[in-house]
Length: 274
Image (cartoon, rainbow, N blue to C red; front, side, top):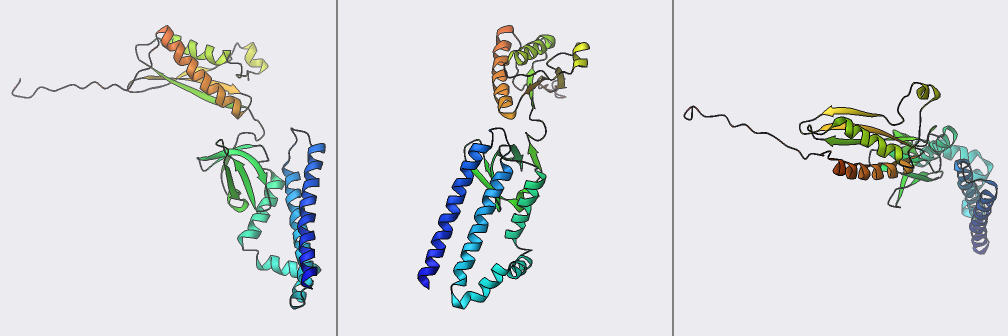
């Protein structure tokens, strides 16, 4: 009897691994690079889970002392009873949340998301229990599905992957604002990753490709903002870094000053000095 149980467990593990490997090969052949992998990944995890449940149920069935439990599990009534009993437990909540994520798709695999203001990265996997996010330091953030389904997310790829980055630069009050705006617009427009989002009616009305406006008047500087558009978040990050550097170099060359904080202090004369 113990040998039979061990054989069933070994066969279950091998079968689960083989099915997972075959499913991955199927995905590699049938799915294109740009196709959404979320449903396939979820089916892969579900298939492995079913194999383990059935295999271990039969293994338990071979143990006389646990035969009645195994019969209940396989028959289905036991599964329903267990589901009801654990409905309030975190494990079932994760599975249900995972199903909702796959059905309604607030994010899918390869989406770039941000949550809690400091957690950001690319969705790498969605399993029955958790979502795996790869951050930009190549670390994995593992979040239970029931937790992430309650979070407010920023999805950079949802519906429209284009990203706008604000290029904010402070110039001194003595600098030429028009020259600064011209430099910012030219550096953004000339970058190869910048895209033109103007509509046909905008072109007819001579709307500039890059919008540059004076944003605010601060204590020591005038803040000028340029709107830089890119196809996706990765390109937008590179665009922002490159343009910020090129603007600084152009400002230095053409005499536009980026000031450091300054404060003027006036001393009042005392009554004795008066």
